[in-house]
Image (cartoon, rainbow over all chains, first blue to last red; front, side, top):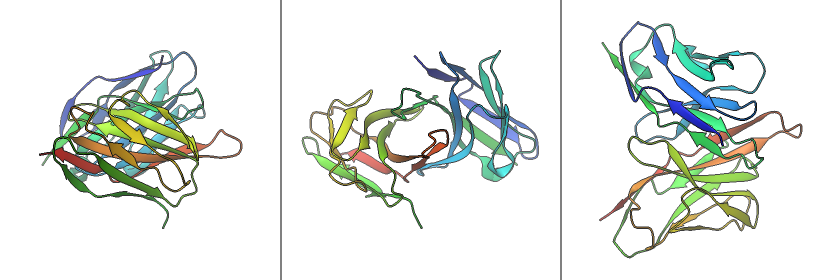
Length: 114
Length: 116
């Protein structure tokens, strides 16, 4: 069975400092992995996705993530946090059974301090 | 512009009532999904449908029902059998290119259901 674990429920950074949101996955085959962002009472917006091409994936708003098979990790990073980055972030793996079901991590709340 | 429309944005239900959440997409996507979100938890799958007139239970289907009579529409009914329905509900659709290698998801903006 596939699963996703987000290692931090809350992360707090100062504006202009780097962001690191950690995600480990478990999958019996090569997974498709996503990072989504959710602002309060909003739907989910795709930041980036990995589908077995380049291991370093660049997304929107300066975010990127690196797929590391040996560590089963897909951590999300950004060099410099902006106040508008404050939100909930979800690491997601796609079920490869053909149904397209998404399996979500528990989420990480990113706080950005001025 | 194409997208997914969920309505209403906020919904209040009295105990014992059934309520229906609307989800409409004009993206021509085949597959559609309903997820439930509770505070401090990720999204959990309620039901999904890969084609018209067909749908399957997800991980937490008890107390919910769906229909898929049209490709564009995938309404979710929260029945009185759902003991703890207060949550944020998100609808999603999936596109998949013919080569099946490129696919992605679009999410609606959600409906917040509160039992009063």
